[in-house]
Image (cartoon, rainbow, N blue to C red; front, side):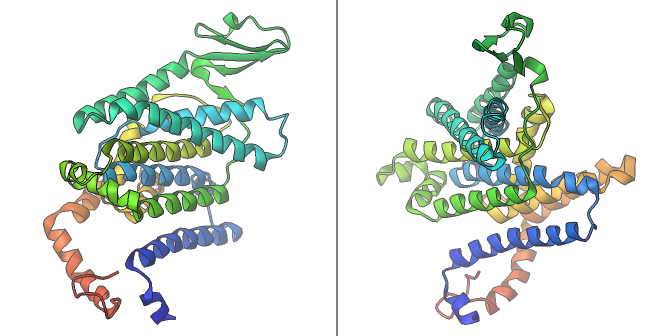
Length: 363
């Protein structure tokens, strides 16, 4: 068994370990839940936890593998969340089967977010560095503010739209308001579960890992390493940058669908979809290691659970949280910490190395 495992490619082994970590964590949590050892607070964090993991992994595709700084991830999440919640709210009676309705909502949320990713990406990806970050940040704020002034209702005559208030919809007595401006969408079916969240994480991992290990993924990383050299050997810069940006946006939309269907009321507030959310997702990516899928997962889980686990410490909670952030940053990026980590990991790499692998490489 060990020989068969070691006969696999390094990337295949690494991918299998990542999938195994997610599945093992799911089984442990399900076991603890069945034994009644999980608090209601922790249980309520499970679906948001899956949402943040998908967001972190998808943003890593743009930041870590494409090498572009994007701060509009919360905007794509917002688009997917509201598009899917609007569909589910409209079709709640027409499609009583929750699984089918959620699947269609999932596809709609991913498609709409991916479409916005393409539309935004075409002009924006011509920019680089800070300019790209500022424009994508502005996109997220625009989306949030547009939704906050949007009123949509439905009656026997069809849909009604307004940007003033709900009264201006002029609906019949049988009408209902679907999107009520700053009050958002109320009554979205709570179809999201922890099991669905884990399945979506595995699908997201499968898409991203297979992409980065494919020819297209190597082209994307070549653009990150040296744009001029990549262009000189015939790599279509615009095509691959747009591909990575659109896939990342679509997966952010998937996270938005999961987020929207875990709440009874969905609102576009600065806390939910503002620039602070985009920065928090970027923190997951940076602290977990830029270009490290497994690191993004671990960082998202730790930094989401930590504030809640420390809630009993009251005034010291955020102080400890800040210290953990600093320690994680030093562990991942300080030269001495990297040297120490590599020195200790090399011992395990020696035992886990195939005979045909050189001494400097390992799993």
